[in-house]
Length: 221
Image (cartoon, rainbow, N blue to C red):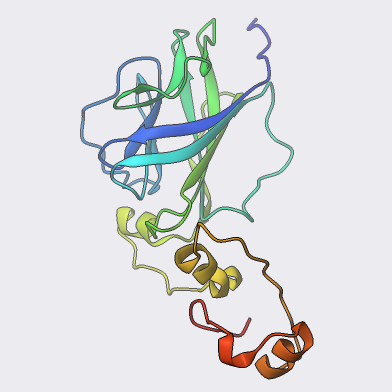
């Protein structure tokens, strides 16, 4: 009978190489992976490879190991959600980039060797300016076929050999100018107003229209 699996959680940034990072019990893999099966993740005998939108740099990754399957599947905050089975060897497992493990704290030994179910969540793979992030959730479970719970980003469609989906602009995209155009060395207050013209807002705030300066392109939400 297998011993119980403790609950573990880690989060941090992982260095990338060639659009990949890995959850592995060995060195960073060097073989070529196409990710054609599900467009996001592929398992082999040494670990699990995850395909990223960025070729190099860093992405944020959190990982949760838990004793049983999650009660719900979280798809609302993610672009792609894929689930597959993976057999951990029992050696030390860590999130790994080409330069080494993410952190010395992110290592556990799933002894004895056991079968896991891994659910990979991804967001921000299509736009280099986006905050690209991943959530990995593992729990012990017998092997079963892969499952794609959500597939909405363009990268996943290309890797699966599917036509790219139509671009659906997120509601918060109207506020992207705050991130791209903002003066990082300036203090400011952002006020959201509805049902008023620009002149009315300026008058209410006691501002002078001749001194107002526009940041980014105004857009209606």
